[in-house]
Length: 340
Image (cartoon, rainbow, N blue to C red):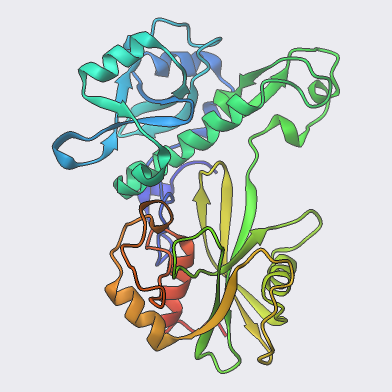
């Protein structure tokens, strides 16, 4: 089901980039005539080499939509618009293209192409969700121009959600192949909790802002369950052995196309921390009081990794800001959520 189920919210915590207001209308993606009709009255979310077109009017960041009649190219090749869905009965498409004529339209409206980070975190949450969908889909389409099976050129089908090989004899035209459909990479984000549930184990990478610690994270490998991945990453990054694992919430992450799976895990006993695979520079146990003080002092909505922390004291603890699923895991635990 690709409809939004009446706009209801089913989770007590809505992560950034999620809870889109679009009706994706997945049932019409294969109907090219309907998509062409929708394109005639559509608003277009434009990217140039992955950079979204945004409005910064009156000091507020918003998506810079361009009306479809501004595009002289045809609906299909080489434009290849991706159908995102309808918002208030207005069709929304996304396009990644370098078109001087569109640049002129954007300039006349005061729009500009900007880096995704940190600009995307300044958007209203509903628009951030649309941006995430558009960025992930246009990025996937741009990266997959040739068939992995035979090397022939591919073209987009199903509103941009699939690719079809131009070679009619290719195996991908005869059977369902995973490379023919949009890829999403699952990532586990884990808050590791002490046996007495009074401390959480957080780690940091060397390239991060000084003082920044976060949950343990890593990609789920082939042949792994979510629980297996949590236990493996916990050991590889910190040398700890966890027992119970509980899923909590998820978050789409358009850098370029991941699904963050937020979990909690609990160690059976405290052991010496060992940075087994050397991915982390450091890992430490932090108490609820230490983290509570950090959340109280930290500025919401800032992308610490790209904007800097604004702290000169390296002893100051920082955690990811509220746009990140790691923040939601840490905050929920600090505020009394008991996963075990």
